[in-house]
Length: 281
Image (cartoon, rainbow, N blue to C red; front, side):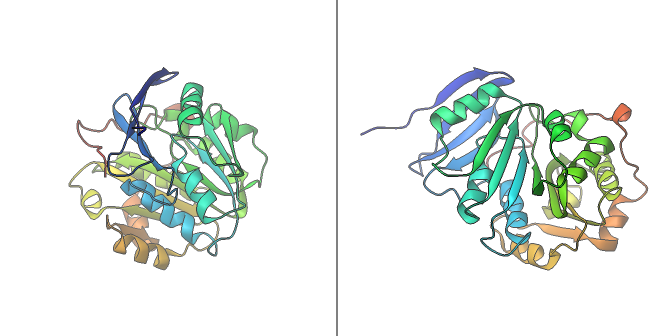
């Protein structure tokens, strides 16, 4: 009997650990410096364990008719949870994954290899530098889930970064980002203001307790030039094992208030989460 054992390796940006899930035969949790980063079930790539990945998955499910292949650009790789999800739910999709930690890419490729024909290409590069060099109008969806430790790097929070994201997306493309903040939401509101400079349609998905200011937590932002299927998103997120709310339209504009886009020279990383803010769930 081959029992899975944990793997630990010092990579370019920290100490990465792969830990097997005792309840699922070929499922693994990736942590970096102790912070949960990804959860992957090699036998069931459509299984999304973490709350925020489930919400990102809901967006990916509703951006186009079920099963339609998409060109997807992922900024931030982790253990390739969402690229695996897209490959399973939208066969034939072409995906690029940009991850700055080349050592982490090597670890994942060695222990959690992608299936043959997945259509996923990994790039060891800084997310913004790669984005700035990417062709215009080349992606249907851009998924941003980049954390240096537990914070989004400053150069991925500015209006200059959003401009590049909008350039790379096609006219009917969708931008989706995983961020984290707490009341009074200074960081999150600034990110919404920056997206509003380039996208007509915005939505925010978050757990009600986070939106009410009760705790620090993840918020998924969605942006597009075309109407978003917020009704479908609302149904999916409300019925999820981890229910969430979808804010859009006037309510989201009220939430953003008088926040202003963040310029490159003023950009700072996302807020430091309080101890114990993020766990497995």
